[in-house]
Length: 269
Image (cartoon, rainbow, N blue to C red; front, side, top):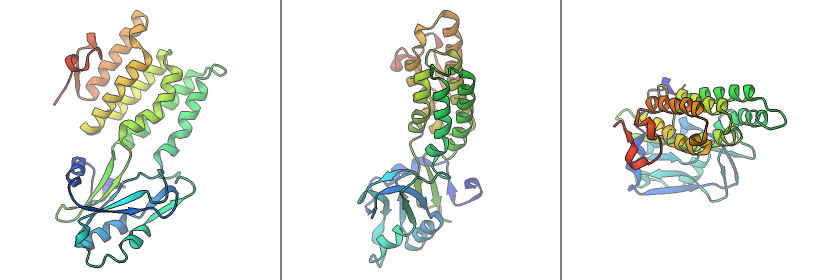
């Protein structure tokens, strides 16, 4: 488990921005395929031994092409013998023809999305099943969000040695909910379930995650066209959005929700 490893820091992900001005060397893929596995232990030990920082810039399950960058090595000038640098690091990365279902979040939850969308089709019209899938997605993504965009490995001096990037969390939210929102945008039961899932995702998560959940909720509000709902439906959904604003540490004037972002939405900073 990530939280059991004292070398992994998932709280100070803002440190990623500190590397933008540091010289780096790109390690590129030798074959096309899906990123199936990073040997994080070997990458971390190599980075410590060589006095460098390694960034795995593609999440597990991402498809890459030949010559696409997959690793960045910062402070690579510290390496005395650079002859085998590329070959050594590539041996710590597995690229294959299929995604790694065990580690790929998008693949692992894809079936839930497919079942929900199928349940919402006119031929089946089973919103109860769709709601169950949405609730499960909320639970799973809440756990995923605890890892957020990266795992940051540090050495005993708190020097960052390895960054294992994930996907931007709001992209994950979009990938998992946009089809369900499309098919269920006129069903208050589905809209309510998605809002419940977003509220669950915010639980115990960082301000970075909460901000991205809140940003995604703007899309959901527009997508479902809440303002066109009947009076009682709109009042109920507005209240759920308000609950989400509290869960994501936002302060919102519910009477003018999402009308003018600059004037009417303030973040609780």
